[in-house]
Length: 279
Ligand SMILES: [Zn+2]
Image 1 (cartoon, rainbow, N blue to C red):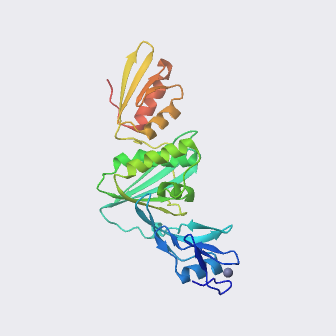
Image 2: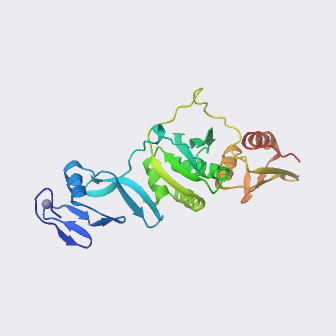
Image 3: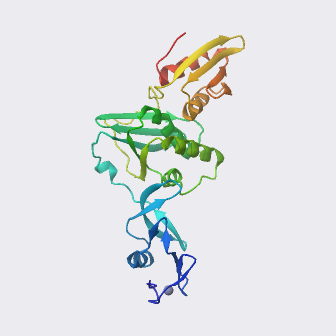
């Protein structure tokens, strides 16, 4: 391999091409061996064409360009052409994720001819955490035999999901780990697209119904308040519940204690997120 700047042969040390001019590039990067053409483009134009890599950590192929940034080599995820080219196929479910504002996530699901928009309000949750939660919220509605194509509008989130970057924030890291575990049940891929899908009739922010159709909420009146037991609870349900009913106390996973004065709030939440099962 030749240094494009100096036209001299690179030296190879520790899986790196090195040149006296300071250029240092990996010989192999995520299962891919750089070609002379890649190196030329990277050095002369700042980025390569799209390359297919392999992440051992996630056992997953992914596509990205490589680019130079502050002398370091990094991935440049190719902006998906997805929105223009959604192919209908019975097996694939498209899940588009858009952060509307901190804690407020719009999720748009396309499954064959069915299209559904849901807006999840996770209150004070950090945006990247809220995105993980919104995905966790819809996964139970997608059968395991489906393929999932996640299209997110945030590169950092894409890197987190691919395991190429680890969130420093403890809560986000926790959410991403739980999400990664749930995604193992599926054949999935994730990509970046900065385009936002427009919806017919405009985007109705705020109220979406049936956010967690798979849960069942049981209320048991007790002396010290209302014991709420949520069947099929998950991390997203829990966070949403605690943000909506701020005075609720978590007893254990899926079990909460709500003060009598919050009865209305509790009913409002239940009506919104699932079909009521009254006792
Ligand atoms: Zn050189």
